[in-house]
Length: 251
Ligand code: PMM
Image 1: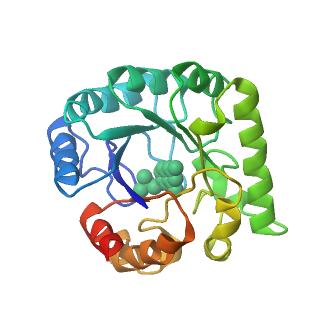
Image 2 (image 1 turned 60 degrees about the vertical axis):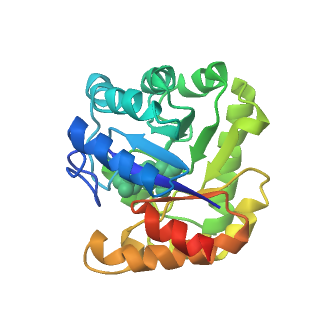
Image 3 (image 1 turned 90 degrees about the horizontal axis):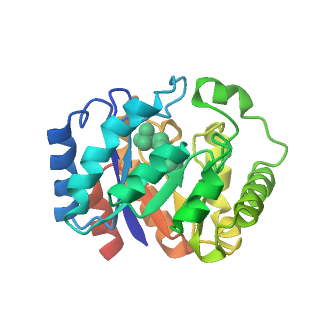
C-alpha cells in the first residue's frame, strides 16, 4: 500500500492549515516527506474542510505551482488536489503527474475532458457538493450502496470523457457529506470499493470521526486505520504524517 503525504498550501485546512502556507515551509515539509519515504505528495491550495469558502483560481495557482515546480526537481510523484481543470493543467505542466479531484468531476465541467487530454491518473472522490454546506447532504439509504453507485456514475462520466480505465482511481471521500457512522460503515465495507476494479485511495487522516478533541489527537487512530486497511487491497492512504505510516506498513 502506498503512502500519499498531504501538503496543504493553505491558511485554513482543518489539520495543518497555516503550517505550510508560505513557499519555504511548504517546500521544507515536502522535502521532509521525501526523506521519510513518501510515495506521492498531494499538494493542494484550497481547503475542503466543512464550511470552507472557495478560493479564486489565481490564488490556488499562486499557492501551488511554485511548490510543485520546486518539489518536482526531486523526482517524487506529485498529485494536485484541485477541483479546477485550469489548476490541474498548470500543475501537470509544472511537474505533477496525478490529478486528485475531490469533486469527481462535478465541480468543473471541463475537468474530466482536461484529465483525458492530459492522459494522467485521475482520482475521482465521492462528493455531494461544496464544503460550505456538505454536512446537510449526509443523508443515505444504505451508505455503502449509495456511495458506490454515485462513484460508479462518476467513473462512467470519466470514461465517456475519454479517461482511460488504467488512469482511474476511486476514493470513497471519508468525511465529505458523511457523518461518523457513514465513515465507519464505508471502512467496514472497503472490500466492496476494492471490488469495483479500480485502485482505491482512502483519506481518513485526522478526521473528526476518529475521535479526540483536535486533529493532533487523532494521529494514533489514523495509524491504526492504516494498519487496518493494509491487508484489504486498498491502493494508498492519504495522510498528514508520513513516517509512522511507512513504519507500520513495513511491519
Ligand atoms: N480529504 C481532504 C482533501 N482532499 N482528497 C482525497 N482524494 N481524499 C480525501 O479524503 C481528501 C482529499 C480533506 O483533508 P485535508 O484538509 O487534511 O487535506
